[in-house]
Length: 174
Length: 230
Ligand SMILES: Nc1ncnc2c1ncn2[C@@H]1O[C@H](COP(=O)(O)OP(=O)(O)OP(=O)(O)O)[C@@H](O)[C@H]1O
Ligand SMILES: [Mg+2]
Image (cartoon, rainbow over all chains, first blue to last red; front, side, top):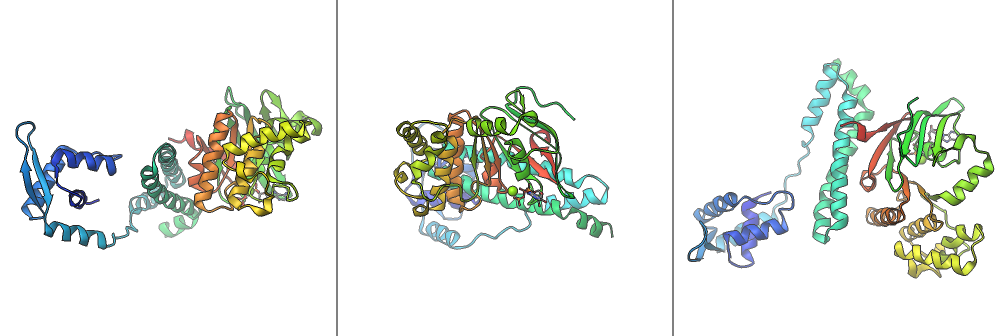
């Protein structure tokens, strides 16, 4: 995810201080990984340098960075472009697992065990997400569902690969 | 043959069942604790339904042991087993389990009526479970007049109405879209947990299995406990 674009988008709703931006980000998007303060300030100084935000005021006293940021017209255009462009689908997410499976077959190890281990790991995460979804609000549900559908697709691949291990082994060793 | 894990409500070891030359079960194991939800997954034809039928005392295995609450199922007679199914177990299947001629509340109350509970009391208990499954407004309708997802929730209410200690569910969401399937799973697991009923859940959908506490995979009639892997 582009943190720069996300922070810009948050600013489009109105000027905010750096610490306020971090809080808004964590609340809406940072369920698993809250932003580090350092990340916020380095991102903001990059956006400032590129003319996508400007300093709207400085609070007196207090912490290290009390700047209030506002989005510029160029910033709004940047958010607009980002939102209108599709994300590149990533069909190679599983190249690591595929590599592991092939290597296991090549070296005479148990590829089925490897797949089962991965399956158990995926399922464990799916259970955690399902629990979070059950207890959460609609935003939690949507975020978790997205992850769950992806994990489900991975699991289908794991299952299909497990069913084809015999043939794959023949081809790999040829 | 390994011993059943201590403290389990229902446990099976060394289950074998052949249909002609097909080994539907080939040394399968299973165990579940009170109030636990266990998903049974695996490819089509691997023996999931056969395992469920054996555990529920519907199909006798050729060999192996099934112990429910300290009693060996395989040495009970047919009468004792069907008594057990009526009083201790509840069932949910993929399709067609509601009696089309009866209203929904009558369907849910039916298992109680069969054990001799008076109509009024049976329907009061039925309504309680229909509320848990969010289908209390459908009481007067017949199964043909409600959606598939609603029908499954009525079926779950019916499975819970006798206060069973184990619910057997074979692909309970198999005919539903994902939104309705998840609603059924959410309400089923919540209701079962609140009643401290265990659930044996056969499903091929991982998102459905994710509502369980634990998963086993059946392949070629043999079972594998995924918890013990990592
Ligand atoms: N009553 C029966 N008579 C003959 N063969 C049967 C019978 N029931 C099951 N089998 C066979 O036993 C094997 C296991 O069947 P089972 O129904 O348990 O599979 P399953 O895992 O539930 O499959 P699915 O996911 O398709 O429902 C299959 O090969 C099936 O054809
Ligand atoms: Mg089946």
